[in-house]
Length: 248
Image 1: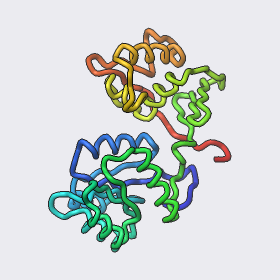
Image 2: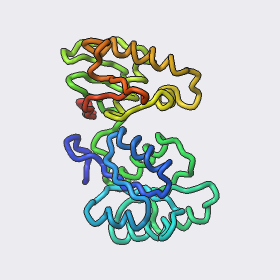
Image 3: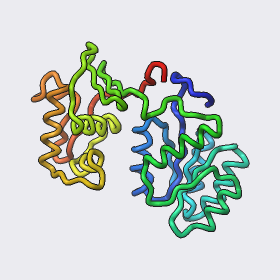
């Protein structure tokens, strides 16, 4: 994939890490940012993915059982000409240097902020001439005629009318739109909406959801979009697309 035509396919990322506790939430986050994700828990798994897929970039953990990330990185660069960002632990300075010497494009040190990783992915793709089709920060969220502009924080209904939402409502809605059809429990929503400095509590989440429902649901007591999952939390039930802004 080349260029940045907004009609082209999303950037395809191969994510290789043997720790499910890191790989799975990261894959979910990146998918919410508009990327297509293939996961592998080992170098062997990554090689299997490559039999049928042609990713645009790889994120590779250095320390994995069996074939390590450096060996896989060398393979990806030499046989696939694939940009690689290494996922490294704090003590892996020598391995980072070796990785860069064999051709890795960048690295991030665990633990890292997902937004920093996304910025590095975009930077590497631009340098490689494989820029993302749609910049996730600029793209509208679209669901059943509704549109949310994440930069201007403007929500419009299917008739094009502006719907006023507070900052808290915007954050809550964006959390749902980044994770459509996923069950999000209250702790996860608190983390997505407030981050590590959350001072809210479960009831506050319920109150924010109720307020948001009154803005976007035809009947807030019988919600179509934000559905309650008994014992689990909430799920945004509609399909969500990311669409480039005109002139973006």
